[in-house]
Every structure is written in C-alpha cells, then in structure tokens.
Image 1 (cartoon, helix red, strand yellow):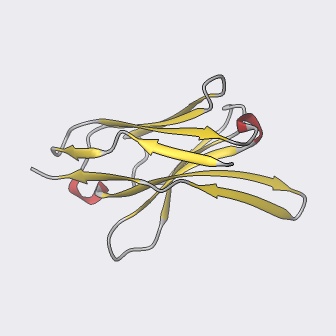
Image 2 (cartoon, one colour; image 1 turned 135 degrees about the vertical axis):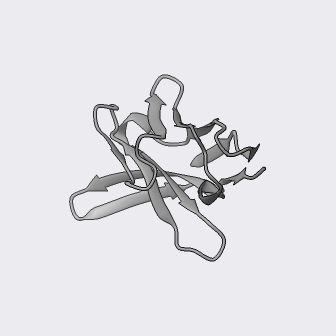
Image 3 (cartoon, one colour; image 1 turned 180 degrees about the vertical axis):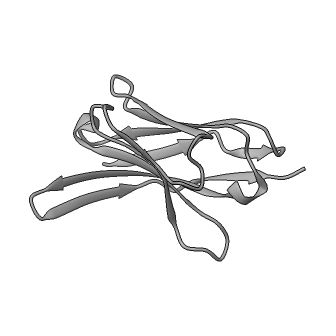
Length: 120
C-alpha cells in the first residue's frame, strides 16, 4: 500500500522557519521524483519544489526560490522541505507528491498534506 505521510507543519511567525517531512512507503522511493506542492484556501495548487530520484537535480518556484531547500534521503524514504523567512502568503496546505514517468505514462502518488500557517 502506497503511503506518503507529511509532517512538520504548524503555526509560525513571519520570518520564522519550518522543516516539512514526507515519509514514503509502498513503492521504490529512489525511482520517483519527489515534489512539494501547496494549496492556499481558494487558490489553485502550485508547485513549490521538486527533486529528482537520485537527488541530483532540483527545481524551485520563483515565488519561493532562495527561501526553501528540498532534499531527500533515499535510505530513509523521506523527502524534506526546509523553509526559511516565512511570509503570511506562504500559508497553505503543503502536499507531498511522488511521480514516475514511464514512456508516455505518469504515475503519481499524493499525501494528505500538512497545514502551514504564517501569522503573528
């Protein structure tokens, strides 16, 4: 059974930091690119950061570049999102995604999300 379980969200003051974790199970973790998305209330889901299966390549949304770092530990089947200098506009549910593209097909798994609230 595939599972992606996010943790580490919470309430943080503007300028603060959080590290989110996503623990994966039920699939071969290293074969999947991992991403963090976020969805604010009333807005569309957007990509925050992505990392390749072996971790050699990363990609960040322009809106948050320089304030976040995505990393993964394939031995622990876990992907992380370190977020610094958080702003109120970073408030959202943060979701973990695992994706593997095989030919013309894409396999996607999603976690349930963890709430991040940035407020004073």
